[in-house]
Length: 281
Length: 285
Image (cartoon, rainbow over all chains, first blue to last red; front, side):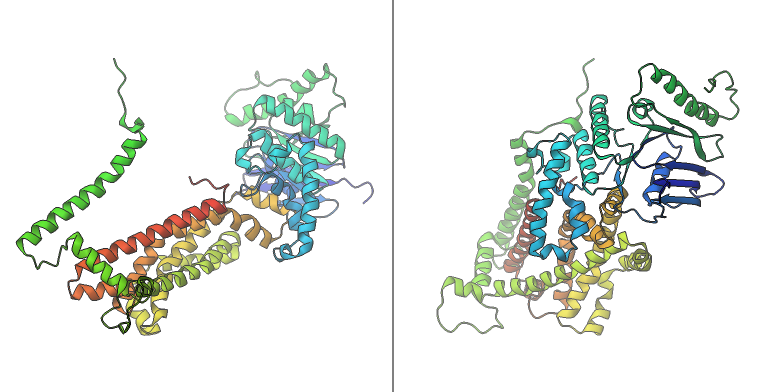
């Protein structure tokens, strides 16, 4: 497996309903271990679909998705997942949510009746409490239910829940989109810190250029060339680490111009948008 | 121009709410008492609208002595002993036994609905059939059930099962389908198996709503149970009501009806309290 990318997407095509209106067309993307890749694009361009392909909850019409050199047809513990909503189980407390992965992977339903289960559960709870502290929550929050937490706190717990299963890849689907700007900034700092500490590979879906620039080591822009074609990778840039302030406006312009160009041409094919299209860098 | 006040935005005080909620009860009781008194004045032998005194006497007789067809206790007994051999107690036990047997049989229906909602092959296999079955009027099957299962307990329980299970299956099916797909995917990424997802994620999450659905169907369960008991039974609350109807025994029928309503009310209250206690995270919407 030496020299092989951790995630390899080759000519992936996805279509819902009619194959003549694909969502993704011939997407090629390789992601190395330890990268923080932000998938950027307009709403509806197929970012989440691409993420679900990597997750294994969706299969491509054509093409191949390899994770750790293997095709995965189901989601499993190698890939953690943090969606935008419904990321926590409402019937479990914060601590139970975080320990869920450990419990289900080690004990079946009947295994919960064994004395060993209670010993192991205590250990898992200790570990979960350490995660709780790392994500900036208090121990008094441990016994709260998700609906007693704010949106930002819920997403913090969802990240801890995913990380506790120790996946090699963390897939985040617009995970911070529903948060207010200040909480969003805190969450960005948190995920960046956790990424530095764990060197986990992250694939982060967002439609926010700022967010992509402040988080990613690499940004991949998905866009459509025309309305009847599926999205493909239109731009794939590495973000200098650390990113200098003077580089940001130039990168922003470059990233936004790619996705905006496609959005204008998609809206109405009759529109003469030549004057509105910015020059690509 | 003054802003128009919308009644829809009114916020009645607690006292007003309590008073309003009892008005219809008071009106109903008042109307009954007036009618009963008027009919008794016209005909002291009237049995259609017994007075409160007649009903108390009828009910205390039912609660302290056996039915006419029972063996009467030979020796004077305590009140508790008399109640435990009384017509009311025996009828309540007989109906209660059938009622709880039927409730227990709803559990497999919940499991079937859960599997139909989660496993597409199971859903494809059962859904159309259950939908069809749901449209059959259970009471129209009554003669067939009596022919097929005889007039014993089985036919009455089958009537309840046939009448209520399709609703419970479809309710559970819809509840299982309504669990966000993200949670199922998330559970898989945390190492859960299919059965972990079914029993440790979905069933646990929908359980309070399933209990709610069963609670709301308690009346339907009793309806089918009463239909069965009235037609073919030798004991039970509905059997007694049907029997007393022949003798115009309204002084016992009305208290029996109120007793059944009270039992159902208590069952409803208990299920609500248990649901709240067992699932503190659950908010009824």
